[in-house]
Length: 116
Image (cartoon, rainbow, N blue to C red):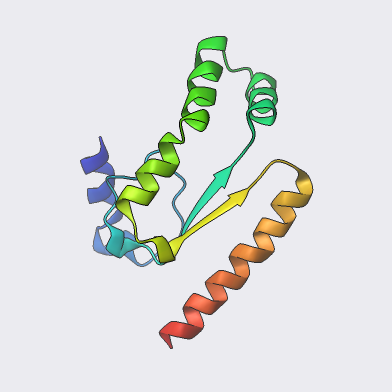
């Protein structure tokens, strides 16, 4: 599945528009594709509440909580990409999300300016 996905987004038609990818697993994406990796984190209580509100069953909620506790996604990101392109942000409250948008937008502007 990962190979099919990577092949699709690297076709000439798609590669120039590949500026954003949201994925729960990251270790199969080549590092050269990204200038910035944003890892959004959430506390377990908030994560539980969000997933329950979305109607996730108990098994899926437990799986997600365990992954967050064990930092599975963080470990994948740290193992797969250079530290200087990783940005880890808390995303629990509406205020966090609003601040994160500003932080990410500023970082994207810096990256664009550095490339010029």
